[in-house]
Length: 221
Image 1 (cartoon, rainbow, N blue to C red):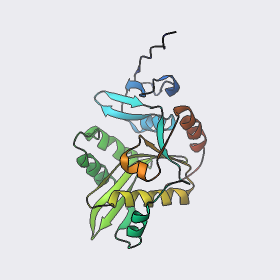
Image 2 (cartoon, helix red, strand yellow):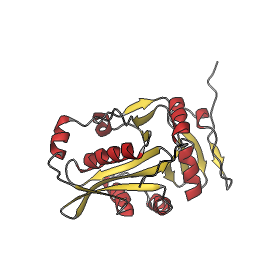
Image 3 (cartoon, rainbow, N blue to C red):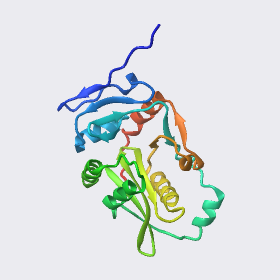
Image 4 (tube, rainbow, N blue to C red):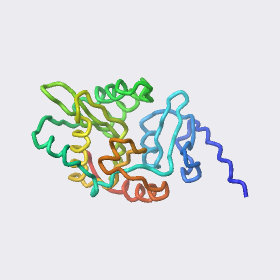
């Protein structure tokens, strides 16, 4: 039997998404719509995230990469480095600057002006957050993402000095644990996140975990 051909849904003004379980493994669920706060909120709570702006494309890949917060691994050399307390950390102090730095750090970035504006609006509404890593009063690293209940969906991170992005990630994981978060989505594994214990789970398992996570009343703080 031939596999069923999946045609991504074209979204309109109605606030909705198709079931991501119907999408192929590469994950393209739908295209169109907008990057409004309401649509982004619904997307993350549905296990979907945007990847391009013109047109907007919506994705839910299988498998999905996550950090298991109880199994996050800090390599010995990094732990030794962090014990020297080389950085200062803040939360939500320079959100837009962190996103802009993430965009600048990647030559072929998907973080376009439309994304920067959209996630800044989401931040202003309390749904998107940043961790800033400072050294000598300068922003040298950071990470940003989206929260929904007990979910934190990491979007991107950057560094200007060695280990700054890893340090921001370690700080973020400690913060999420303290606030009761249960699911840390990172979409896809990279060489850096693999070193820190990132794992892949099936899309079905991710969506099941997500359903439980978004019911929690966690606040990022």
